[in-house]
Amino acid sequence: MTPDNIYIFKFGRRELDNRLIIRYGHKWTGRQMIKEIDLRLHKQKHPRVFRTEAELLEYLQKHLLEHEAKVHPELNDKKDEKVTDAASK
Image 1 (cartoon, rainbow, N blue to C red):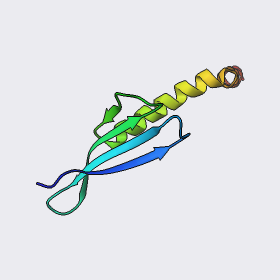
Image 2: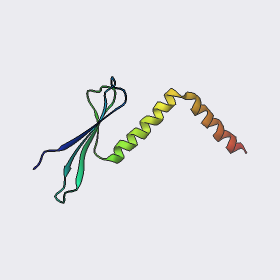
Image 3: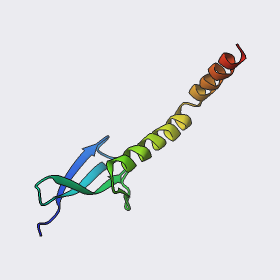
Image 4: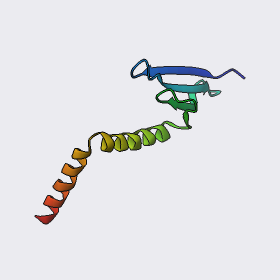
């Protein structure tokens, strides 16, 4: 058995210390196989762990929508107005 290989991607501001850590190995055919994806945002001690890329993307999409709703509440009001206007026509 060979030890896991690790990729570490750092992003965002330096003081936030955001990291995406991907642990992967190789199948007997030589293809790469992702074993675990750790997402550490804002100096977290306990990262969010994902088994597949799909789980990570689903989390990020949900997290982004929640963040946008908090930061830009006026955008949600405009979306609601457009939907109600279109429905009444």
